[in-house]
Image (cartoon, rainbow, N blue to C red; front, side, top):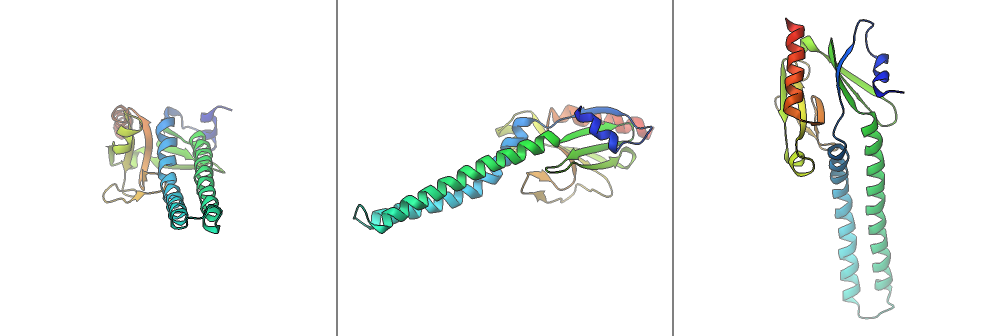
Length: 195
């Protein structure tokens, strides 16, 4: 089944897909892994420091503290490993289900983890198209960014960031390649509708 075929569920009879965009795989998956792994690394670091302090504090080789230190180090390693594998799998699945399309009537975002979710915004409701290129866009995958679309129902001003996925809370096409070119294309579609 073609990825764009899933959009047929939500498109009107007289609606056609003009252009589709897929997030950059490297940027989408690796940023989310880094954001999720950071707390896991902090917990693992705490266990490692505790294990080192416990083993240094006691000079006996087969002491209870040395056994606890080894167990804590194993637990810390297991936490980081499970967080890494679990995060990679979750975001790999999410990446496979994420796609952005421009139709002759609206902008549609397909996303999800277990199921497939669709959200849309009519082209004639769009008031502003903004491009955000952040630190991670430059650090992880150059020439990527987020297209933020503002309307009266999804204003751009003072929107908090969604910390779990590094995306803005407004309607956005996140982690796309060539964000300035994509923004120009979207603006041209909107201008053609509003004429």
